[in-house]
Image 1 (spheres, helix red, strand yellow):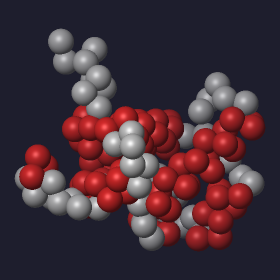
Image 2 (cartoon, helix red, strand yellow):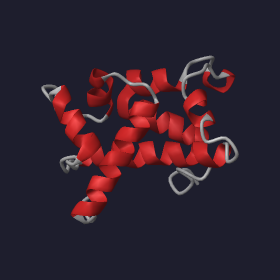
Image 3 (cartoon, helix red, strand yellow):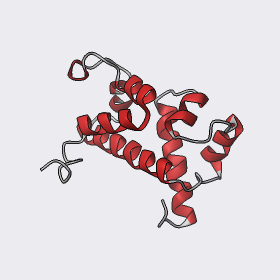
Image 4 (cartoon, helix red, strand yellow):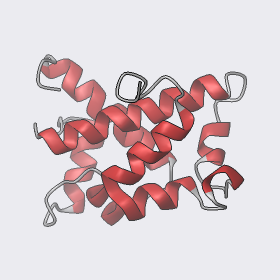
Amino acid sequence: MKNLTPEEQLALTIRVMEIVDGWGLSAAEIISLLNLPDKTPTRALRRYRENTAFPFSPGLNDRLEHIIGITDALRTSYPHNPHMGKIWIRQRSKKLNNQIPLQIIVENGLEGIVEIRKHLDCSYDWHKNP
């Protein structure tokens, strides 16, 4: 996000808010998932949905990158059904020890986000694990 124009930052913010809203997260879960300050008021989330870009922070930027990566992987996994990603993220998976991917994400923060991205995106992390 550091090298994005203000317009690109706003477009990214709105897109990520659409994604997490589509996942059905509560305001508190969104604040936690994005690693926003604990005292972030819920009205700030409304502004992020409409006309305010996320503040720059390395922790937030990592999470945004992974959330977009998860969404892209779900889109390529289910190219003929754009709604399937929202379904997949909310149902139990045998490949994840019968856990719900969204629950892993919410409960484990960045580690959970990375775990789900690695599970979905076979090309992610190749350069880190030769």
